[in-house]
Image 1 (cartoon, rainbow, N blue to C red):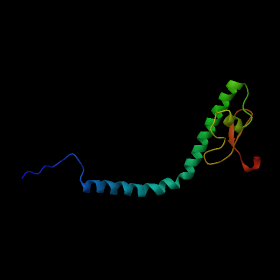
Image 2: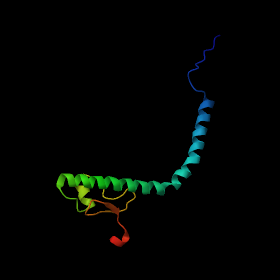
Image 3: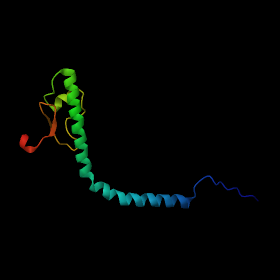
Image 4: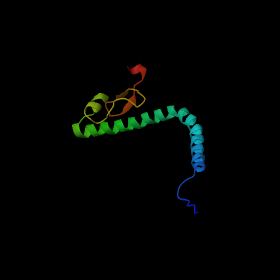
Length: 106
């Protein structure tokens, strides 16, 4: 009687070892990722501010003046939202600079 072995696949033990390694890496990485969530949010807002400023200059090139508010950029289709990904409101200056709205300026 001849036994045929297929050497092209993984054994059950090999698959279990790979799953164990992946789950161990996830257990180590998830707490570090959740700790840095605030940093990610602030960097996302900084990037969105730069995008909004560039879109304000695009608006000026097409219309001759800077937009009067962030909502103008959103309604005209230059931006999808007038707030940062974290929910912070933004203000646009008369020179096209975009800043985060503080509680004092509301």
